[in-house]
Amino acid sequence: MGHTVPGRLQPLNPIADDGDEYNFCSTCAFGSVCLGSGVEKFALRDLHCLVEHVGNFRSGHTIFRTGERFTALYAVRSGMVKTRLVDIEGRELVLGFYLPGELVGLNAIHPETYPCDAIALDTVEVCRFSFPALATLATRMPGIQQELFRRLSKDIGNAALLAGDYSADERLAAFLIDLARRYAERGFPPDALHLAMSRGDIANYLRLAAETVSRVLRRFQDRGLIAVEGRNVTIAKPDELYALARPILQR
Image (cartoon, rainbow, N blue to C red; front, side, top):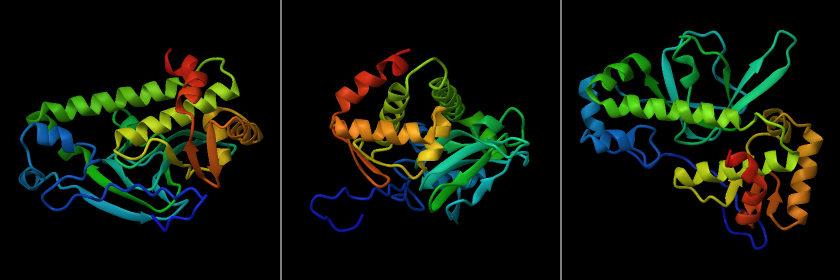
């Protein structure tokens, strides 16, 4: 985490690395399901469902590509991953960002090929779950299937946040509040965000101009809603920021 420097925001580098051979990481995508069903991590060896740690992927490296055969789901272990589409003209469309403990690749289950690229935004490690093995495990543990459905539904809900005629302030406020909630769900501080993605990526995802994102961030900072230092953002007034985001988040 680095040493404390007075007056400076501290860098945030969350990682789901508190597990071992016998214990799940606290942010494991399926740890709570298995533990709730009385299955210990070591017991999964008997079901041939070993989780493979993969990485390090450096910034800009690809975890999977559009059109590749779908064989596995990936849970981010450290760093941040973005998913994107690139059209025939080479234009990029950012689809989402994934934090430690979140699953990437759920949208590949039906087409059986990955419908987008997954790109590391900084140094990334992932847990690779063989989907055939996971599907077999789900027949013995219905909670696994329910968790997959829950996460797939949540992904669809997050994508729906972009629909509608909302202002730039509302979109960016909702983005920051949603990111803070997701950090909190993984056990990380909800008021200290690390934006590993560029301003351009955020703008692309929110369907805004990059200049607009920078201008709104400055406006939020001038109002005391947030403090920005490089890619680190502290949410200083979450209630006021949520009030801006309410039209989107309470649809």
